[in-house]
Image (cartoon, rainbow, N blue to C red):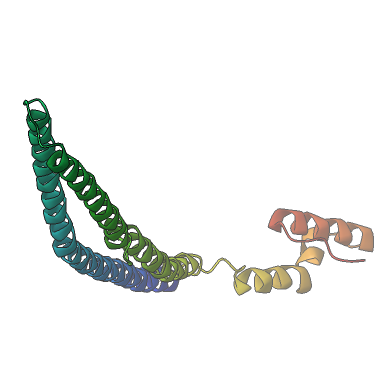
Length: 210
């Protein structure tokens, strides 16, 4: 096995380890992000439970109060339909119904305001997800850096610089009188120059500067 093959295999072995390390980092970061988001969302739901159940209980109480208020108004209607109805008492009942309606409306307004506070109490589920996304972006920037390092190492697995042996052999062919040998009996400068040019062309070398 040649030197370059051995070097390339060693480099690729190290790159494989880097790849495994990157996958391990991504898996670890993703698990941490998922765990944090899961805990935060669970806490958010738990915190919402008591508040929302209490508001639901209040809404039931308001509905029950309104049902009783309706029955009271219906009783007023019945009493007014009778002969010799007690108008004074009916008036008081009507005012009482109106007052209870006002109280119910006020309770409803307070419940609605409290519901808004409970629902929008930070951090909301949306904000928790946004935090998770930001954490993912920060982690992914590190992953990308590691991935770029792997790609950079691919470029160095094989030495693509021109082998020094080529330059050395070119110098030997052009500098050790081989052109004179190839010229045979025609050893004038023009003929030797032509042979040098032929050698340069065959070797794919850059032409000599005049």
